[in-house]
Amino acid sequence: MLKRTALAMSLFTILGAAHGANQDEMRKLLTERMPGAQIGAITKAPYGGLYEVVINGLNVFYTDENANIAIIGKMIDLKTKKDLVEARTQQLMHVDFASLPLDKAIVKVKGDGSRKVAVFSDPDCPFCQELEQELNKVSNVTIYTFLYPIAELHPDAERKAKLVWCSEDRAKAWDELMLQGKEPAASEKPCEVPFQAIQEIAKKAWINGTPGLVFADGKLVPGVIKSFQIERNLGVSQPKAAAAQSKN
Image 1: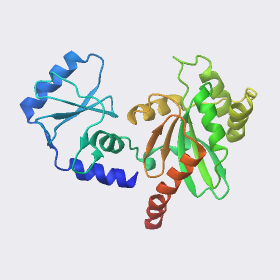
Image 2: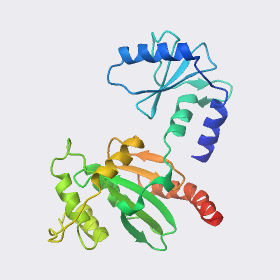
Image 3: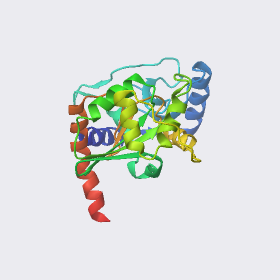
Image 4: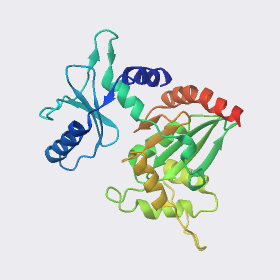
């Protein structure tokens, strides 16, 4: 991740913002021709008069100055043999871990808890349940789980998420629900849930589905990954996290 980020930075430092009038006109054209899409930054690429367009937060495509075409997919620099789209996408898929409100997460410490990962999860999401099986194989990690029920897909998810959040032992309740299918008992005590705040955080980070993992170095990984991939990302992110702590 660090190498890819460095590559992305070096490749795109030569990009300049599209000239004001050009950019405004292109944005207008793209908005008209791609209704519903959220058009982000537009920058002039150093290739063939093309412009790079960031769309819906985490996706990249290229177009001409009149926004007549969309080049989607790989774009290879034949000199370096690197995929410019992949490098740029990796650069965009970054979340400031320090900005996450960890007090709104379920905290589970495994082993010495030295490594850190945040997970956005829906209790009725089958992929989230699969991810929990993989996370269960990882040790020496602190897992921050943000309950992110998506009602449009799972109408009963918010009810289950509330049961977990209002439990006396949230981490245990979450594990039993996701790994054993056992719902926690309803709490009789008043309980406020932070779902709205978590939804706002997810929206800012362009986490539109579950599961979504954020590692200590800021790398965002959508979807299910295997335990060895989690280990690999924890290994990459750990030096940076440790360095940040040593400065405090």
